[in-house]
Image (cartoon, rainbow, N blue to C red):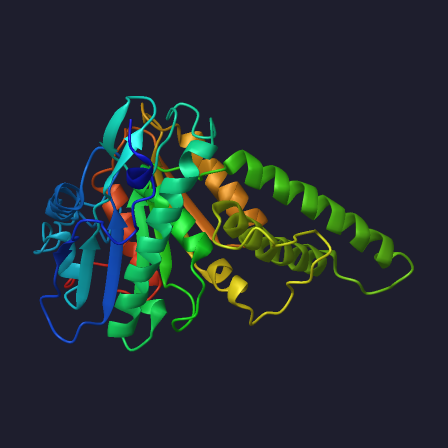
Amino acid sequence: MPTASQQQSSETDFPLPYIHLPTVQPHTHTIILLHGRGSNGQEFGEEFLSNNNHHHPTSSSSTLPPPKNYKLPLTSHFPTTKWIFPSTKPHWSTTYQQPLQQWFDIATLSDPDSQPDLQIQGLKQSAIYLTNLIKAETALLGNRSERVVLGGMSQGCAAGLVALMVLDGEEGGRLGGFVGFSGWMPFAGWMDGFLRAGVGMEQGEGEEGKEGKEGDDSSTMTKTTTATMGKKVLIAFRHRLGIIGDDFDFDYGSDFRGDDSKESQALQVPIFLEHGMKDPIVSPLCSQQIREILQLMGMKVVLKLYRSCGHWIQEPEGYDDFVEFLGGIGIGNGVLEGS
């Protein structure tokens, strides 16, 4: 059993990350990807980057030969990009009664919402570490935070989502994007209930105010409602992790409608998710739940499901889709050079 001092260890004692430097200068973007439970940054990074991207510019039925650089490494798309694969420090596992290489403690992966209080300390420490890492990279990129992409695999996706929720947006604005593979949303049940209750209340209030007024656009009302609730849930989420003090007083009536508020920065980040339908460790329903929750918050989410994939990234389609997403947000070409 860990001592009290071990339980309260600082967010600064995380191991050094595994880094793949840009092959061409200047350094224009940074992609930060988190490993899953039981792994580490180097192990995950080497495996992730060793996969060749099999990008087909034509349909699978085409008789045309593949492009000459058919099997170029994934990094060939992004020569000016730095890849960072952080490692978590060991956190105490209540289930296994020993330290485990995990971003936060969790009772069971079959029900990630189970015993959520176990998760708070590790999530908070990991979120603070990751936000500091993001701010450091943002500074290196001239305070252009839109040139930083965050993401992760499995528990790394979960920890990354929490970091996204608590990132304050002070260092130049929003992130460029978030990518998640085979992941889940911590406190998903609480977030879903919070959002649906709040959206339902605000829509009810909107309908009452709408009576007798011509020209009202219900779609605009819904968009405004989800954006408002998105800002509110970010505040409540930070409060639950202890990022905001205990004296924080939250209620649905609070006004967080300012479009330029720090709380709105995370809501503008495009989200890309992948999950294998044959995943034996984390149910693909978890990624569907991430999508539903984030869409209720007013965020733009793309989810790709792969019929024959397990707890990893579908090859080659998953890598193709990942490259295409990054290309769509202005990182790399999105297609193989010469294709």
